[in-house]
Length: 124
Image 1: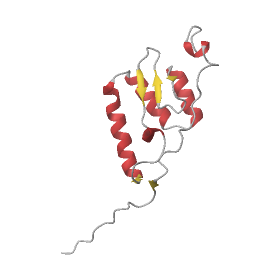
Image 2 (image 1 turned 45 degrees about the horizontal axis):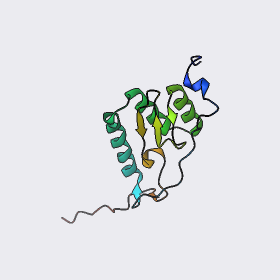
Image 3 (image 1 turned 90 degrees about the vertical axis):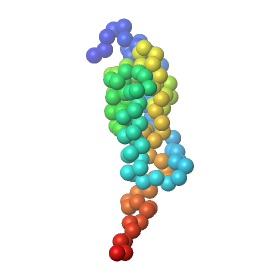
Image 4 (image 1 turned 135 degrees about the vertical axis):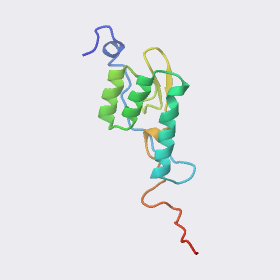
């Protein structure tokens, strides 16, 4: 249930709907663990650049969810999408939230399975 005067009910027909980001390529192939580390670092530091912690938390949850759940999270938090892929959002107070591609989707050159760096065998 939303408030009668909320921006969600007024502009619901004109609001952008969340969609999956377009495929993208990282400058060099990266592993799942490297991608995970980049994401953790972003989410740990993002609230320090302004905006509300609650909005950052909602964006974090939405970024890690399927599109339909991400839409529900964005709508319930009152997040306004400038870009449908969630790369640029605003809260109801006008604060800007910019999300890098790597927190929204995996690159097409993601290395799956074992790390490309081979373990060294000790020769002692």
